[in-house]
Image 1: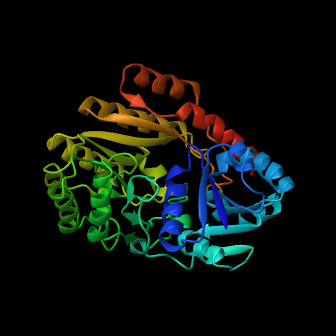
Image 2: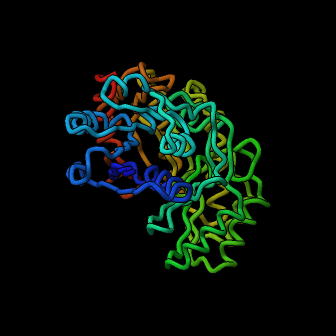
Image 3: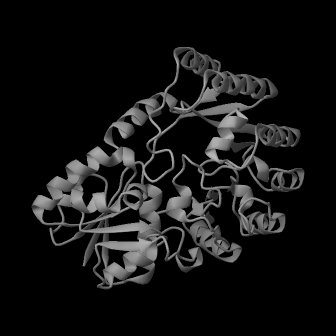
Length: 385
């Protein structure tokens, strides 16, 4: 039995996690990674081809599905778009769709179960049941230490895909796999989590300082040379930042920046987004981080269709204040993602004066991000909705 994962630059983390699950549980499955559709076509047409993709990959996936279906491949869909649009994926030509958590259902499928849609929304997995990466094939990614988010922000797919109950991978398992990684000369630890300072907590927000310190201490103990916590590819909620947790991680981590999800400088917009924190919480988090010698890297989303000019000016004034304090800004444009409350709200609208302000900050080295490309993607997503 052959399983081919179609890997792109946007889905590698998902592919390696699923690859790890299959390799650890099923020794009769021959697994391949295809970085181009041409790589798929070199393998027999009785193979299963698995896609994990986001909505902005839809056009490319549609074209590839047409080609592969004409050759007789059996096609599997998973990831954010499939979770939000399962029936549409079947109509597109996929034979089986996996929504939500994919590990257990993919293994069930490979063991012979055949259903059009596999439910990983009500059937959630325990992260400890599956490896975080695939040592056997030397496929390494940042370790997913938590999955799920209780906040259900109006623009975000995380709680839809991963659930509202936060699940954590144990310190023991993380350390075990990092030790295996060290044997392969993987000396750097990075993590995937919706909220790094929520690791080990019951509510996903209130820092469990003991659990976080146990993780970081034990990784240092086994010889991990570099640890990056609270930075890419994860971030930190502002209401999870306090002196105790920041002072503690400073003793263990190599990063001197921490990524904070602010999203707006308008409390009115934050309430609409259901962020669960205020602008003042962001400012408090920034001040704590600066006090301990970290540079806050603060995320903002621009172009919400319901923003007023007053909201936009309030956000920019807040950003100017943060920049003066020593923060760096990471800019995004609003994306109307399928399955979210705001999927039909409209596309990103950034007035000329706002674009000029963002470009000025970028030219001064105070702002980064792909907000310009995302503004175009926002229009494409909304036109396809």
